[in-house]
Image (cartoon, rainbow, N blue to C red; front, side, top):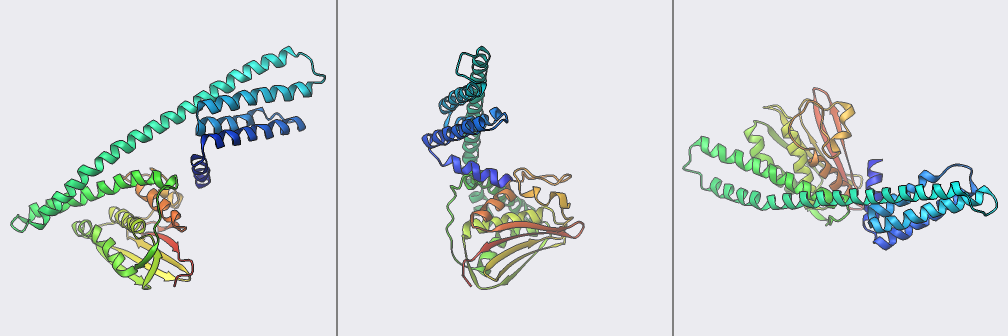
Length: 338
C-alpha cells in the first residue's frame, strides 16, 4: 500500500499544474454525474479532487475545484429535489459547503507548502554538510598515509575517525538520494560489471570498521559478470554490510554473496547477530523504521537500499532467525544476460 501511494504521488508530482487542474475537474464532473444517478451521499468524495488540485497544483487550482464542487453538488441536489425553484435550505447549504471547501483547499495547499519548505531546508543543510565531511575524510586519509611515525594508539584513532566520517557521509548521501529515488529523479546507469572486483571494492569500504570490531569479512561469488548500476548497487551492498557490522558481535563473521543464476543476480549479506523479530522484517526498510530495543541509526540507509533496488527493477527482503543472525537479500533482473 505504501509503495502504491508513493507511485501515485510521483505520478502527479511530474505533471503540470494545468494537467492536475484538468484531472481534478474531470473527477469532480464524474462525481457530480454519479451523485445524480445514485441515492448515496457522495459529497465527502468531492474532497478527493479538491485535495488533488490543492496539494499538487496550489491553492488557486484548489479554489477553482472547490467552487465547482460546491456548485455541482448544489445543482445536483436541486434537480433531485423536484421542479426547479428557489430552495432556501439548499442555498444555505451551498454557502456553508463552499466556505468549507475553500477552507479545506487553502489548508491543504498551505500544508504542502510547509512540507516543501521543510524538505528544502533539510536538503540545504544536509547538502552543505557533505563538503566539510568530504574534506575531513581527505585530511584523515592523508594523515593515515603519513602516520608511520605515530604511536599505535594515534593511528587507531585516525582509523576510527575515518570510519565515523565515512558513516556520516553515507548518511548524508542517503538523505539526499532517498528523495530523488522516491520522485524517480535518480538516474540508473546499467552496464556490464565484473562481480568479484566489484565486491572486493565494497568490502574495502568497511574493512577498517570490521577490523576495529574484530569481525571477519568473507565473500563468495558465483558467476563472472552481470548487468547493473555499479554506483547504486555498491552503495546498497555497503549499506547492508554496515548494517550487518553494526549488529554483529565481536569475533563473528559477515558473509557477502553474489550469485548469477536463472536470469537474475542475487546479492546477500549474512551476519551472525541477534536476528530480527518477524514482525519487524518489513518495517526495517521503511523511513526511520527501527527494531524496538535497538539503538543508533536513522533507518534511512535501508530505505535507500529498497528504493535503489526497486529503481533497477529488483526486490529486497530479509530472512532472519532470532539468536542466529540475519540475511539481507536483493535481486537485480538481467533481462537475458547470462
